[in-house]
Image: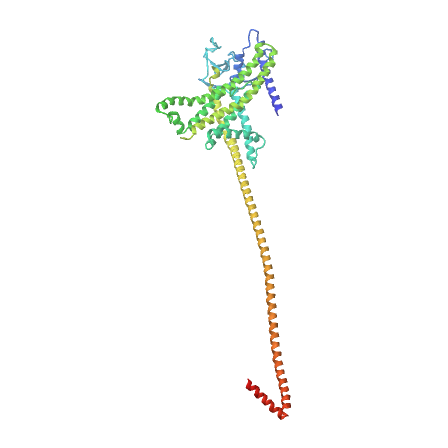
Length: 367
Length: 164
């Protein structure tokens, strides 16, 4: 078991290095004047993108071939909804490829769709690289690679848990077997180690579905982020993702707050009146800081892990020597192993803190 | 800055995806699994409790058995003691009975002997009286045949009478 895990890990790192080698050769062979920019490479891997780019074959040659899963671009502008495939951009993200749809011209500038202004036929950039004659669409609801990977992750989650749940229906003795025996300890862990101690024996049941769902949703997306062949689908390291989950936690906390909770925020009992007035703004800020800390913690931890691995791999191309490869691979293997632990820890922390906030909101007066 | 600005599109899709996932999993996974797990835990708890109860009952039963055995033993002891006592009593009674019977028989025998003796004495007396009379008759006849002797006798008689 441990041996096969190790093998898989080694393979994972190998894939990562291969995909990066391909990427780097692009910068090298694309012209000697074009220097390898690790920052740009890392940011492109960490951020969202319109297509699911897996690998490029024969890069820089006549028969260059991209292995990509094209994803739909859905934008809503003044002229209504426009939909087209991300393959229309032909892997260009510098604003060169202009896609004409619905009487509008779209370009991809660093994986952001821009609409060219009326009459413009080419994007012009200012000194900082921002387009000057194009603007963002009103709403960009594209199925980006993060959305796509998120859907893959929920498909996997549904597959695991629905088949596990079916096992419980089938057996009369409720003895966990197969996938259920793998899933049940985790569910019981969330119940006994997170929900019960944080929320309390009597009220935890109401929050169990939410806690279980965020725990497994974050965990599986963290894990998927570590699979390099998916080109760093950094779903849980995207601030929009963590923002949404933290916002849901905040909403649930706010709506389940009882009299005791609000009293502690606006009129702290047991302290003198000047202190009450002093504490009120602090507590109100604290109300918002809690979910914001949730949001930043998950985003920063997961993104940092990706950045470190990519930076270690970039060393090979910064030093322009293959001799660096064993060092990079060894270090990124080490970091990847740590990241595997981090995937679970971050999911656990997000869940336990959410549970803690629910527990604080529903706590009964005890003095 | 781009990195830390939440994109509306991704927020939108994350929200929808998450809510759908939450709804489906809650209905079809969490509730059945948690229900089954807690049901099983209840079952285990009940089974343990009933096992404990059975053990208790077993212990009680054993204690009862012990007590009954003890009682039976005591009863046997008592019965044996009774029997022994009864035996001794019966022997003693029989002895007494025999004693009294024997003394009674002896008494009867003595009484019979006494009455026999009396009867024999009476008969002897009557015999002796008869014999005496006969002897006296013979003597008197003999004496009366001789006048002198008669007189002398009378005289002797008279003389004796005065002495009395």
